[in-house]
Length: 274
Image (tube, rainbow, N blue to C red):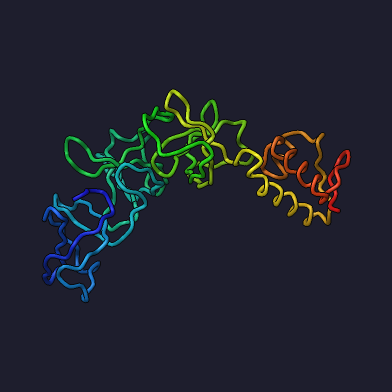
């Protein structure tokens, strides 16, 4: 049975308090009655999340914000001198020991949390202490892949981000074209898988194959401006970033394509819809 994971288990027995589920190795966990279905029969398969409660394996049909080995943004429900309890989407809160808190966790505040199994206790545990830009040996990505991001924190080079809830990467300041906020979610693209095992991420796709997205954004702005957009080849990167949330490089590629397709006219200080 995989602790801290969503998995499919089989109904093995039932009592007035709930049902017992087992895996292929006949290891069992208990699913309380509030989460079980009276129509389930012995032998039926059920998808559940397995956790611990009072040193016993328990199951829930609730979906946690993340599984073991993943990151998620969680809100602190209450604190004790020994640690903090975090809401992670299931009936039992996740415990973060005091020694696993990078800074003191405050009740009601959000934190970025990594979930792991403590080697000493064998318990599902949270931590806010983790390397901001670790080195990975093997990665399931290739350059250009679209990924989901959680914005973590600002560094001297850019913003650290969580990729697909599992990996830590970096978006350089030069690749940021809009205001970012800690714990917000964004769509990103793998920019580079470095030889040192680190991951560079961009907030925008690169290359001509992705120009349609940028062209569409420019056309939408032109329509909103009654056919005029006061940006051109001479506009500064800052002006383009503020208006379109894209780089000057991608802007120039996009308007070049629109001009070639005879959709716009490029003037000294603006572009015009034809």
